[in-house]
Amino acid sequence: SSSFVGMGLACPSDADEAKLFSSFFSTKRLTTATYEECTCCAIKPHIIKEKLVGKVLKNLISNGFVVSAIQMFKMERAAAAEFLEV
Image (cartoon, rainbow, N blue to C red; front, side, top):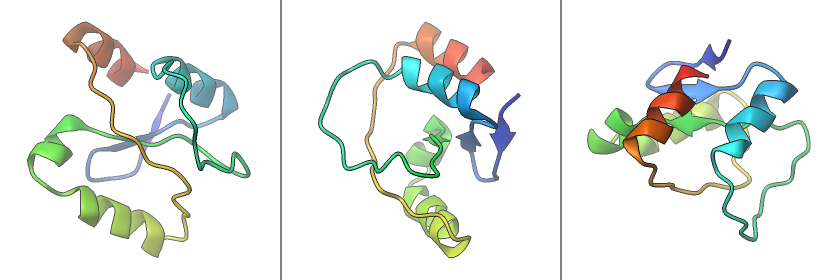
């Protein structure tokens, strides 16, 4: 199951789960992601609505994480519900 790191941030707990997370974001785009010692984190919609994204990112960085890429996705409700069940 996913590891949840407070404030609506969902992080996969292993490489297989990270691959599953990435399958929800199939759009091919150029990225600055380094893919070295990395994980995929998803900030949940209520955090965006409450304008707390900066606080979440600051918390990640202050805990030693490096944000090498960031992207916003809009998902259909059914896809989002399935993603959040992971």
